[in-house]
Amino acid sequence: MRIEESIDVEAPRSVVWDYLTDPANYLVFMDGATRWDVVGDVERGLGARYRVLLRVGSAEVGGLIEVVEWHPEADMAWSSVTGVDQRGRWHLRDRPGGDTRVNFRFAYGVAGAGIAGVLAEHVAARWLRGDFKRSLRAIKEILESSGARA
Amino acid sequence: MAASRTDTAAQAHAENGSANSGHPGRASRVPGIAAGAARRGRSLLGAVAGVVAGRVQDALKADLDDRDPDYIRENLPWVWLMSSLWFRGEVRDIGRIPEEGAVLLVGNHSGGNVTPDTTVFTLAFYTYFGVERRFHQLAHNLVLTSPIGPLLRRYGTVAASHENARKALEAGAAVLVYPGGDWEVHRPSWQTNRVDFAGRRGFVRLALEAGVPIVPIVAIGGQETALFLSHGERLSRGLGLDRLFRLKVLPISVTMPWLINVGDFLGHVPLPSKITIQVLKPIDLVERFGRDPDVDAVYDHVTAVMQETLYELAAERRLPVVG
Image (cartoon, rainbow over all chains, first blue to last red; front, top):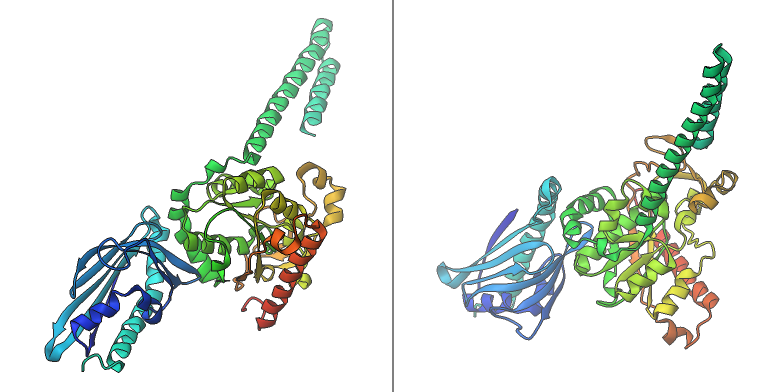
């Protein structure tokens, strides 16, 4: 299952990038996140690892993730090491007037889970889509209210 | 019982044979044939009983390696669907469980043989800590010898015994125990908000021996999944089930789809009651009770904090089942 959400933020890419790549911010803006801890010595960048949990339905679901793509001010992607199979990606692009388009993609599933896995993915999508929409709105509000554009 | 039926049948056959036959030689041979058949019947039954006993023993042995993380991961979606959509499960403060190392999780138990609190908590544990973390649940012998026993063993369930629990703790596992077991799980519905371990203090001795903290887990909602009428302990004693199967109860309840359900051996369809579970702070027994803690004092403390929490959870509930 793949979920994709976008939003335009009135802030430069560099500011949005700094905000999104700081693990300390995830519990602030990511709706449903209950944990986003740095694991190991690398806090951000390629190879950084985080222990992540999102409340989905009756459980906090997640596991250990690792940053596998890192193109400053453009793309950051992670993949799961343990826990639910997942890939996430922040994709930033310029918009006219110095704004930034923030695109978030999240793909997840449980390999080998069969029909139950497919059902669970669809049911979970209802929760996750709502969470991600609220998260992007939170990013927009936080960055725009901080006067990042000026 | 089956053996005596066979013996009687063989004897009757022998008697019929001798009565109906007019041939003296044939008459003298028939009892011998019947006796042989009876012997063969007895040895066959003995063999069957031996196989059954062997299987039961196998099912009750704690082979901790039966736990299969891949199987658990692949089946969590079913459990998640059931827990999220049917029971609307909510587990609070699961982060209070120590991140690593052996720990004894002590819970109150509800819901008859279906035990939705175990389903909701097991899901929460595995999604929070990952299927890689060793986690074993202690279950009644009958559960593990039932047809779903092999599946549960892959989830990490082992037969409830002091030895099995000690092995699991020594292996560094988190172990979930329900001291109230078959007694508490079938308590009448009007005792829903009661923690009832029936005085079973084995979990305290286990934690002391293993030197592990106790984390109390308090659940509410499970006893609203059916109408539980009676433990049926007199019935169980009368039928000798306590001696044969360690069954202290033969519960009577009103459940779907059986209506009047005696024993709950086949389980039932639980009502979609909201299950809420509160994880309490770990109790370091030596730190709190000194180097040589009194078992009764620990037992009283654990049950008291759990009872207090259960009352708090009950006070939050507006309606049965709805939550």
